[in-house]
Amino acid sequence: MTRGNNNPNRAPLALGRDRATALLPVIMAIMSFLAVLAAGGFFAILTMTEGWSSTLTGKATVEIPYQEGMDMDRASAEVLKVLLDTPGIVTALPVGEDEIRTILSPWIGDLAQDELPLPRLIDFTIAEGQVDLAALEARLRESNAAIRITGAQAALQSLEDLARLTRTIAALAALSLIGIAALTALFATRALLAGHRRTIEILHLIGATDRYIAAAFQNVFFTRALAGALPGAALGAIILWLTAYFFERMDAALLPAPWPGFAGWLAVALMPALIALITSLTARFAVLAALRRDEE
Amino acid sequence: MENTATPLVRFERVGMRYGIGPEVLRDISFALPEGSFHFLTGSSGAGKSSLLRLLYLSARPSRGLITLFGRDLATARRQDLPMLRRRIGVVFQDYRLLDHLSARENVALPLRLTGGVEEEEIRRNVAELLDWVGLGDRKDARPPTLSGGEKQRVAIARAVIAGPRLLLADEPTGNLDEDMALKLMRLFAELNRHGTTVLVATHDRALIRRFDYPVLRLHDGALDGPFSAAEYGRAPSP
Ligand SMILES: Nc1ncnc2c1ncn2[C@@H]1O[C@H](COP(=O)(O)OP(=O)(O)OP(=O)(O)O)[C@@H](O)[C@H]1O
Ligand SMILES: [Mg+2]
Image (cartoon, rainbow over all chains, first blue to last red; front, side, top):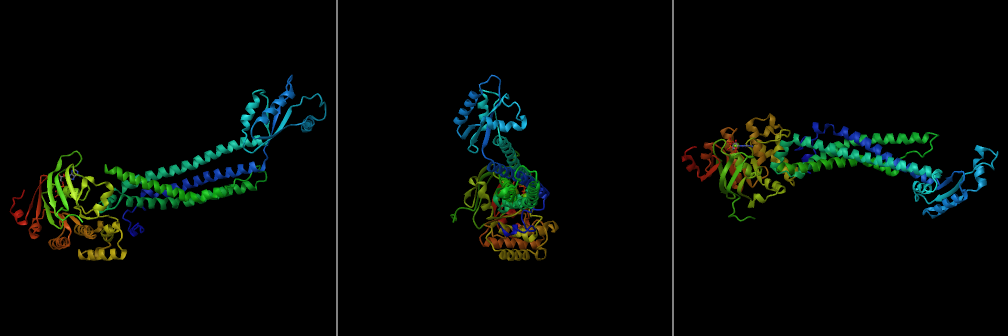
């Protein structure tokens, strides 16, 4: 770049103090703030679910409720066979009658236990993340609609599904925000081009290349977007930190605190640069395309 | 190096129109040998500025062939234009200065765009040239605060600063008093002696008579000449 371009008072294309770009830092601050929250949220959910999987073992239980006239032994054997045939299931073991009584005693007491119809329970363990419990449950229900799978692992899996959905939404939100930043840059570029048409024409006639013109736009969009995106991201980072901090301090918290983790903080730190880069590249290519189009 | 027999500029049966309007230039053929100096004259609206626009690549002909620096302009792509334009100095009839830049920065523009010239050297050359055209005390003034004649001199300084191979001047003395007009014409003549090919559009007959250069005359979109200055003086004025 020529040296004259560094000094705003001497820049042949004085784009810096222009109404078309005056609002750019403000818009980019908002975009960057929201994108940081979305990206931070994405990684926070990731660390939370990682926490669950590593703290809980892959244990679950199939419950066959008692039904009048049903051969409970046969039903139990059928379920056991299905479980043992399912890849990813490491062990499957029917829970003994005594044990079931022990489990149930707080609710029914010791009275008339012999007459009480007992359900059958079959414990099983799975290799982590390798069995789709919902599908397994559907399969077991083909023979008996009352069968259900219970246990921490089952609850965890539905939570994990929810977490995955939330994560997808957070990622889409972050990407949309970056997309909106690019669109904003596109419209600002067009306004700026229109306002400087005469100057650009003169520069062209003196021998300026399209790339020279585009570089002037790219520079001004980069610095203006960065000027807004930096404080916006900083504010977003503070909010992410405070959220995780107070979550952790709550005694009743059942879940690990939503810290974004190393990857999350890295994404947050890179967000201003990413936004400035995308904004300035959009400006560059919009200018090059517009100049080429003008010729026709 | 191009063959010296190849003229720097050649028009062959060139026509030009604005949009779908009538042809403002019709069937123009002429050549400017390298190192030549010509006047281009003709009444107002005859097409002088339009012909110059073809030469500084701001318009394309609607028909015919233009060769510039030995190159057929029809084959020039958009990305070739900057390098061609950097070898051409233009004094625009309406100056076309950048209003937000000082006179000094306006004149420095061609050197900065080309690059490769030391800042110190740019500063020195620009100051020297502005002193020479009598704007030594207006170097930091912006064009809107300059008089017509002062703007014209800034425009001339900008056109010659980079030592162009072809100099196109559109009414470069229209707003200047006679002494200043003569002084600037001598600047053009000096550049011409150093090899610059010069084409000056003017309807100042006194100027044409004073400098004995061949004259091309546009009349109603068609071109006559070149005449010698003496012939031109005798020719009936259209
Ligand atoms: N941008 C334009 N669009 C349409 N017509 C134009 C345009 N510029 C010039 N013309 C027309 O082209 C013709 C030639 O104009 P041009 O400016 O080349 O004349 P000129 O010889 O330079 O005149 P002058 O001595 O007044 O500067 C005129 O009829 C003018 O109306
Ligand atoms: Mg004219």
